[in-house]
Structure formats: C-alpha cells, structure tokens
Amino acid sequence: MNAHAVIGWCGIALAALAMVYAVIACIASSTRIRCSRFIPREMPGVTILKPLRGAEPETYACLRSFCDQAYPRFQIVFGVCDSADPALEVVARLRAEFPRLDLRVAVDRRQHGGSRKVSNLINMMPLVSHECLVLSDSDVRVGRDYLARLVSPLLDSSVGIVTCLYRGCPRQGLWPLLGSLFINDWFMPSVRVAALGGSRAFAFGATIAMRRQVLDRIGGFMPLADQLADDYRLGELTRRLGLRTVLSEVVVDTWVAERSFGELVRHELRWLRTIRALRPTAYAFLFVTFGMPVAALGALLAGGAASALSMLGVTVLGRVGVHWSMRRQGSSRLQFLALPVRDALSLGLWLWSFITRQVQWREDRYRVTRDGSVQLVGDPTQ
Image: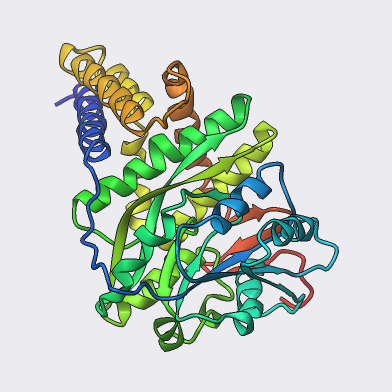
C-alpha cells in the first residue's frame, strides 16, 4: 500500500471517529438525567459556602438566587480574603434585603496552599452551622427549588457528593458567546457522554453538596489546598472512601463574561491544561470531540472521498443536534452559525495546551504539576 493510500485511509478513520463521537454526544445530550431521590420527612439544615473575590454586574443576582430558596433551614457563609473586597458591598445589600436569613462573612487573608479559593473555604469553615454543605462558585444562578432538589440524595449514606451540570449564560458580544459554546456545546456534552457510559468520575465547582462528616473523613479541605482542580479532587477523595457520586437532575446557570479574545483563551487553556494534568492519556485522544474541523480534515486527507464527505455531513448534523439539545431557553436561534469557529478554536487550543503547563486564574499565574497541584509563579515561598 503506497503512502497516498495510507493517508487516505487515515483520513477516513479520522472522519469516522469524529462522526461516531458526534452521534453519541447528540444522543447523550438529548437524554434526560434521572437520579433517585429519597424524600425525608424533615429536610436537614444546609450551609452554603460561597467563596468570593471581586464583584461583577451579575454577582448580586447570582448570590440573591441562593438567598431566595424555598427551603426550611439554611445559612450562607461568604468568604473573602480582603476587607476591601467589593463583594462585601453585595453581601451587605443582601443582609439588608434578607434580615431574617443567617448570612455570615469570613474575612481572612491566611493562605494555606497554592489555591486561593481553597484557602478561602478553609477560613470559612469555623462559621458553618449545619451538617449538609453546598459549595458553589460566585457566578452561579439557581432556581428557588435548587436546595430542595439537590440535598435529598445526601440522606443516602452511600452517597459521597452530589454535583450538577451547568449552562453558560453569555453577556452580549462574540467572546462571551464563544465561551458559552465551549461550556454548553463541548464540555457539558462530553460529561453527558461519560455519564451515559456509567462514569461518575467528575465533580463541578458550580455545585458540590456533601455531608460534613464525609468532608472530615477526607481531612477537610486541606488535602485540596494545592490543587487546581479542587472540585475534581474532592469527588475523587470521596470515591476512595467507597462512596458514590450522584449527578443531580438540577442544572444551574453560570455567567460567561470574557471581555477579550485573550481573556477567553486564558480561561479555556486553564480548563484544558487542568484536564490534561488529571487525565493525560484520555486527553491525548480528545481531538475526536472537536467535531467539524476534525471530520473536515479527515475528508481532506481522504481526497474528498464520498464516504468521508458523508461522514462529515453526519458529523455536522450531530453537532447541530448537540447544540439544539443544549441550547438554553431564550438564547438566539442563530448561535449555531458560530459552531465551526468554536470547534476550530477548541482544536487549536487543545494543540496549544501541550506547549506549557502554566495557567492564569484571575490575576495569578500558576504552574501545574503532573499530579494536578499548583505553584504560584513568582511566589517567593515556592
């Protein structure tokens, strides 16, 4: 077999891989998540942990959605490391609006490791009043039935954590739109594919619910103090105890607010390099998930063979099907026109992610080690 034929067969194989994944992702994205819920006679008290750093225009609406819960007994603990943090103004506004709600604030700049977020969580723990804990990022918005639907699986002693999927809600503009498509049309469908295959090797910072006694059994938050993917490691540590991870039927919203192309690239490279550090072997084959450009490359290598072009067509249909299944209510029907650009950008960033292990998180730059821990670049203590 000559080199031309080998290249052609490789192209057909590449197009076939992209097509198969696109079809599976379309099926997974349209499959409803169901989790069995034990409904107790009395719902347990819950503490919501909200580590904060800075404030965006959406911060008030996001935090308010957690205050306005149809749930009998809960508190919210906010944490900042700087007494001048503008997020404290938002908290003060919420305290005035919800005077009967137990809202507490930890202002503590002590650093316990490379992750500022985890250090914040450690500093917040002395203010916790309840056995059930819910961790959630500051840019997440939820419905009024969020806690009621989320917490009940924790009453099953075999459950370690409960986590949930999330949707990206973009601000106006091209960069937020592309960022939301990264979440909604690539990352979340890949999670659904894994879940459809029976995997529960995930946990997401948008929501993690767990019992405090389980957190104590893994040593609290300290084992996560140097981890970039603290949410993933938290799930991993609970599974090592023989406990299950439950993927809730709840889907929450998270704001996507990239202001520039550079900010978009830095954010997504952090995600990709985190995945690379956690699952390096699987990451090497991640290119098949980038759909249209991979199938188009396969068709090109196959010399425009009819079979490869047919596979490209099926890939495009599957890719649009994923988008339609994941599209949030009220979003533009024309967003699918950006899918080729989104997939090409994702493929390019995947290639770029192999060049260095440095990532940027807000104003801090980190070096990611092979075990997923981080070191602040330029930190004199490292």
